[in-house]
Image (cartoon, rainbow, N blue to C red; front, side):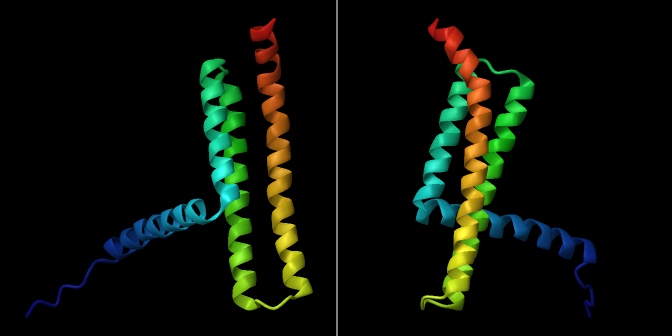
Length: 131
């Protein structure tokens, strides 16, 4: 009789990697269904191309990478909040609406501060390239 059970390590490792599958599914669902997420991805690609073309420094790449990540993460949290709000109530609900507005505000703040960081990094480089 074979009484071997899966070792706890395999179970933990399988759960760990399954979490990446769930996260990946959520990310691609967001990209497929949310126009703002697609806009942010397009903007991120533009930033990468500009960074490569304008030869940004490693520290500037670090800032740009953190900005891209913060905007995409904010968009994911906002999308999750919107989905949860819709699951709770499709009827007009002031508190759900306020929560959705706050989620959107978080994306706006991340995007605006990222744009400022981008302007500070790319502005002088573009000016020197033009001049």
